[in-house]
Each structure stands twice: as structure tokens, then as C-alpha cells.
Length: 180
Image 1: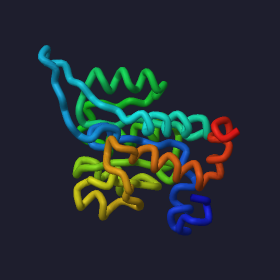
Image 2: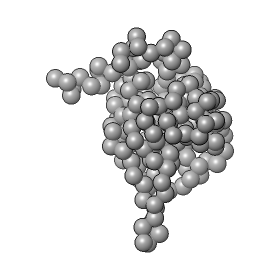
Image 3: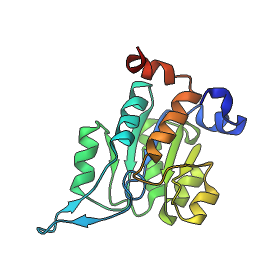
Image 4: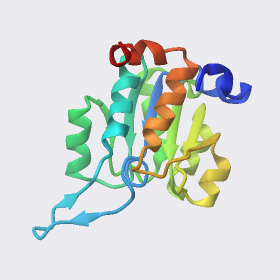
């Protein structure tokens, strides 16, 4: 998709984005919570979503994680992806979001957020550009600026990353190494 294939409203909202904030369960994963026989939590992350995050960072857009749950798997994934802003146990996501704004010095219009459930609604409504994964609850899909074609944990993050990069005119720059 070229920049011209996006609506003017989407271009206006996604163009200024400097930080993509991601919910984890239901967005970066399919929402399943799996425990092994030792009681350790296991999460499954989609490699294409992860690559989308890496491409965003190469394109000058940083990422943050904002989740209501707390998990060692999320901490490890944030470390592996070099995501410095990782908010876990954030039941009041809007409070954590406001802290992210304070720490980064960004305005709401420079942030994007992807969510899937009711706890995400306050940030969906506040971020400059908001997306809901395809299998998000109805209220979140209705409040979001964009609803992904892919469900959570199955390429939704990558989809939004590509949209942001294409609208910002960075897609060719971050994919050029693969297309030579």
C-alpha cells in the first residue's frame, strides 16, 4: 500500500507518530495464558509482529509496552526488543500512559496505541492514533481509528507498523535491504 491508498484522516493521525504503545495479551499474543507444569507462564509472540517492531525502530518510531498483567515473559521480550518503556501491572492504563507522555516529552498526537479489551479504552481514546486488533471487543473496535485485518498475536502489530512506516514515508528505507 502506498501512502496515497490511505484515507486523509488516517494519514493525519498516523503521520506524526513517534511512539507506538502496545498492549500485550490479545495484541502481541492471541490472548491465551498458558502455564507449564511448574506454573510458569508461557507466551507466544508472532515473529512477524516482532520484525514489525524492529522495522519501526529503524524507521525512527520507538515502542513501549503497556499491560495490566505482570509476566516474566513480557519483561524478557521487552529486553530482547530493547523496549525501555515497559509498564506491567498497569490496571489504570491511562495513568501509565500519562507517565509515558511525561517521560518522553511527547504529546498525545505523537503516540499510537494498539489495544483489544475494555481496559484499553481510556488510552484508545487519548492516543493520537489508535488501533484495535480484529478480534478486539466491540467497544474497542468502535472507539479505534483503525481496526486491523489480523487478529491479536497473528500479525496485527506488523500491520499497524507497516501503516505507520508507509504513511511516514519510511517503508522503502526500512525494507530496501531486503529488496535488493
